[in-house]
Length: 422
Image 1: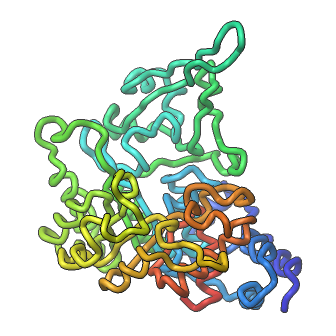
Image 2 (image 1 turned 120 degrees about the vertical axis):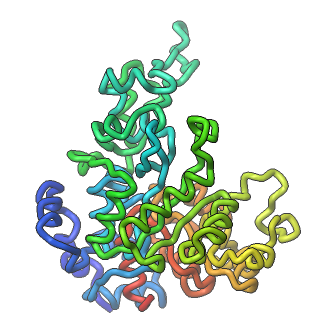
């Protein structure tokens, strides 16, 4: 068994690089020639309880480390880089993510851009600090209101800025920042200073925003496959009177055709099942790898432990030619009588119906000492420390049999996948 501290020393230089030098290096290369997994996998492995999993992962400390499709960059590498920026995408590639995500939405002039939500510019960019653009936001910044006697917060600070509020040329004037807002803010500057404490602003110097077409070009250059998500519009559709949901869904696929991307390298996603069915019907070469993102947990009558509440059923989805389903990872996991993490009934039924599974999202929960939060909600009693995420990942990979997993820090998944030969 290798000493974890020696392992950390070996890989330490893989993470702490200058973001400027890092970007310059990538500009000089046509693709990522080597994978750097940094120190975090060593930290997580050392945090595991003694046992077979820890021993097997420690034995991989010397690598080699290489790109794997099992590791999917969730908005790039959003734990430490501004999401959906060139720098975040490049970081994901450097950490071995074989697939990367551009969440797709549209601007006022119907150009497709990469943002997690149509209306998140106020928390993910500097738009509020640019008066002429902030004036175009759907809802201007409003400072927090406090009780003058008690100092208690009465109304949190707010704003709402959407990609559909501005044109593409205006969008390109923005700079990405770490997602977050200070609800107690009295000024715009205070409002924008909302990065969670377990993240960092260390790599926010550039924050280069991307159009969808630019993301395709970049991913292709980096040798990555692509998984665009068609985001639900937050404006009334048809937008502008004639931009229908169908035209929007087709516009996304058309940009891959225009770029000459092989359909087998594209995994289009949507929470809207009708989008996936539209691609299956109108562009089956792309649609057959369509990913149905399952958010039926928002339906009041849905119970992940009771198959009779699932509509459509796994078998019905398969009959509609859906082949990949993607729920959050808590839906795939539960605990047994011994308190061990095991596959859920949902996971078993999906596999039995012939569906492949992708899941989300690792490394998005901060410290796991209090049960891990939403992403670990069905197994919180088995989550006590950061290393336990590797236990959950091992069950997802070895027992559930997932195709891959989204991560806000792809190096963690890359290390595991390389070690296990996935």
